[in-house]
Amino acid sequence: MSLVVLRRVSFAYDGTPVLVDIDFTIEEGDFLAIIGPNGSGKTTLVKLVLGLLRPTSGQVEIFGRPPSALTDRRKVGYVPQKATHIDPLFPASVEEVVGMTLLSGSRPGGRTGREARARVHHALGEVGMADFAKGPVGRLSGGQQQRVFIARALVTSPRILFLDEPTTGVDAETQDSFYEMLHRLNRSEGLTIVLVTHDIGIVNKHVNRVACLNQRLVYHGDHEGFCRSEAFREMIAHGNHLIAHEH
Amino acid sequence: MQALLAYGFLQRAFLAGLFIAVACAVLGVFLVLRKDAMIGHGLSHIAFAGVALGLFLNVLPLAAALVVAVGAALAVVKLKGRAGLHGDTAIGIFSSLGLALGVLLASLARSFNVELMSYLFGDILAIEPIEVALAVGLAAAVLVAVRLNYDKLLFMTFDRESARAAGIKVGRLDTLLMVLTAVTIVLGMKVVGILLVAALIVIPAAAGLQVALSFRAAIGASAAVAVAAVVGGLGLSLVLNIPASAAIVVLCFLAFVVLFLVKKGRGVPPAAA
Image 1 (cartoon, each protein chain N blue to C red):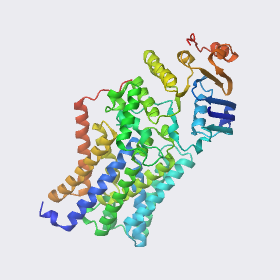
Image 2: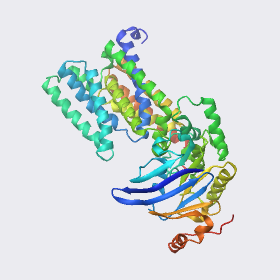
Image 3: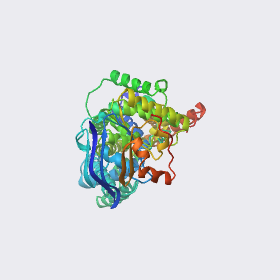
Image 4: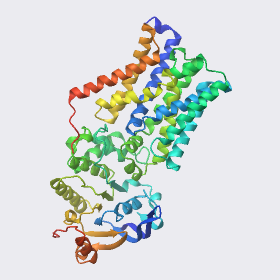
């Protein structure tokens, strides 16, 4: 089942084209990496799907509707690009941050405080951060903060999770355990994951689909096909690294 | 002191002061964290034009200020969104215009008098029963509006983009926050005056943020500082015969210094990388 469909989507900032004629689907169960050089339109593509931007032309659908008409936003989890660049002095506890998505949902009176707290603690448990619930989020390390933001995205039990450059500024060891966690969520929970990155090397062990952007969609398909593609050779020529696929 | 509290004017001052202080402190936490602290300063200048208009038209100055400040707050939101102005340029424009119009209207009404001074510097001990009713009612309405939208306001303040992605109408919330701030500023000017009301929004919030480890705690600490400052300021004003508005603001600042030192003493570790 296609969770996301883009039909001939183009987008321009002040007349400068960022994305041109994108035709593209995201299927249920995909662990998709959207890759491409800086400025290739990766973040713009995700923002179009989420309804944060409107396409200049073409159609975007998520769960069969235009993003602006999607009433149940709880189906969609989002970890934005600068999630770990939060104000360290912001006085929010970890459980307050995770509860934001749950408590501020558009369905009024949907959850009692006790149920909300239970879901928050379950989501924190999923990412191994249950022991930090009461502490201020600003004092956590970058990797720990990233887990908290994943928990915030997971707390509504979404069917699709978008992560935009989630490991920027996170050390290599933490990145590995972070991707292991995403892999588990995709495999055992069936969560569809869309990961934006400019470094395919690190995600290569886990993704099963690749979309390569450079204003246009230059490749969309499975990993093996990508390794044989012209797009892959172009990326290697421009200094992007790829490690052996371990599926 | 107990005998003094039997006086109606003191009861009115404490009642109005406490409600307004809490409303200012609660909104202040959101505004300071949104880096909108100066909005209070700007809207208070605009409210000055409203007071002058009230005096000019011979209607209740507080009501005229309310209409003008809320109208200007809506205009600021529109101007920020549509005119592509940077940062607080919109508030800078309206702030200067408000002050200029205030001076102009006050001059035309020949009302550079004691009443105008009471709005510039505050005179809570002279608050009228109708103003108390207005203040308590509107401050309570502000607090209810914040409570009903608390989670959305918190999400938007913390991470605007994720809040939008979660379906929160951030534009509507911006407007709500500006209108609530305008109402609160107008109420606050009776307590500490147009020239000092921004302090009641900013300083208790800044003080509370020194020690709070959660957002809820920041709101609580900010409200506690504001209430303590209003009660203490009114008390000092009576005992030492000094202006209540100045005493309230100075006490807010002292609370900020104390809580800043508490934070330093606690040795808050730096934020991890």
